[in-house]
Amino acid sequence: MADSTDLRARDTIYAGGEWRAAVSGATREILDPADARPFAVVAEGDEKDTDLAVAAARQAFDEGPWPHTPVAERAALLRRVADLLVRDREELGLLEARDAGKTVEEGRVDIDCVADAFRYFADLVAAEAPGRVVDAGSPDIHSVVVHEPVGVCALITPWNYPLLQASWKIAPALAAGNTFVVKPSEITPLTTVALIGLLVEAGLPAGVANIVTGPGHTVGARMAEHPDVDLVSFTGGLVSGTKVAQAAAPTVKKVALELGGKNPNVVFADACATEEGFDTAVDQALNAAFIHSGQVCSAGARLIVEESVRDRFVAELARRAEKIRLGRGTEDGVECGPLVSAQQREKVEAYVESALKEGAVLRCGGKRPEAAPERPASGYFYEPTVLDRCHREMRVVREEVFGPVLTVETFRTEDEAVALANDTEYGLAGGVWTADPGRARRVAGRLRHGTVWINDFHPYLPQAEWGGFGKSGTGRELGPAGLAEYRETKHVYQNLAPAPVRWFRG
Image (cartoon, rainbow, N blue to C red; front, top):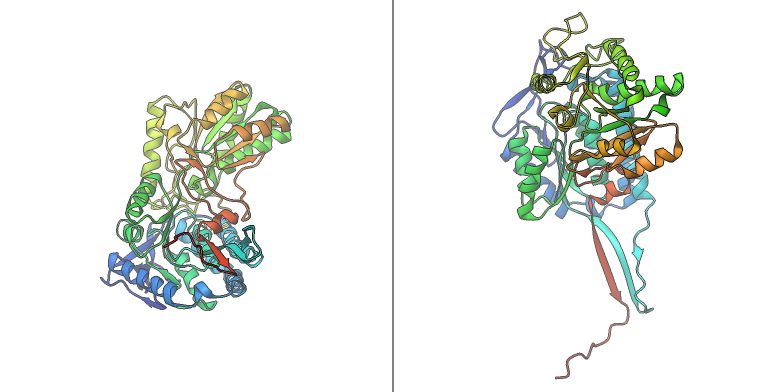
């Protein structure tokens, strides 16, 4: 891996089976958010590069073997990719950590989850029946519903979980028999580039997998509007997602959007009735809010705690948040890394400033930390922040901060807790903490969120669909529904004994 004293541009655009530079020759430096120093250089593609990649994917779908490759062979290739990910786990985990600013341990876990996703979709398609027979009421009619690939898929992925989010799109797209062009975030493209290399090594035919590294306003926008793209799948913010949907509308593409979240973590007093229960709920509230510096779409950024335990709960939460060890993710003992960019840190600072002006009470954090050997002053670090006495009218409560900021609201009754939790334009995820199984089921059933965790926060299962309500998006990833996003349904009706209709008597 190149360091800041030996930067060499890489040909990171892959189209039609060839690695190359951008048509314009433009490049972009990739910064390490822990010290703001460049450590890699990639090609900076634009619309021309996108057109070449889409053309390669179109040709590979219309003329190549992949859409007609037997399911067992497609599944075998996905499993080979999973094995290669395991082989390169340490290198990829380190690269993900350095690129996105997370800890190496988080990076390793991400790679494990990526391998799991490829294996899951391989197993899913391999176990499927060839089609669903429809009874036509006659022995002379064979009627079956089959699933076919959509075609050329445009996959646009975010910067916070670069390889994991890419795998949630690439694995089902390939399992279904599609070709694709992927655009990783221009901030964190390196592991997605590496994944394309593994797909090639695993034997994927030329033109099936294509990647264009470059910014969203050129590459992403062109992918969304391109007439030869059949589906666009986007994960990112609400504003960009709206633009993607608008660009795709004139050509009536299939569109899958996984957007933001403002996720409640509801804590009832009975969950804290024992010391063990209290300790676990506090720890999980920290995990919900501050893993990967809060740069998670499903982050439990809204703590909604029952009033009778609020003071004790918030005091302990703030005490522990102050002890979170910030630093470069590659350093031993570091628990939380920097924000991904200077722009992202400035955004977080603006939200905290507005919250304090609107009456929030700062319990901890709220500033940049002092520099340390493991935490250079030039890095984009920000302290885990707890804001108490918050209410729904505050911007920091309504809008997605995407940083290490936890707001605290209180309730007295179950109905009030549910009303607060649902009082959001988003509907991605939420948590419920209670010792009462009946209450747990009631509250979970009433929450308008795509995923609800009970007495836990953040786990996901490859077998379970991931998506949201409201402005959290329109698509589904993972599980059978994630595979269905990349398919079209065809009804094949075969008359085994055709005869004249004799409708017209002329």
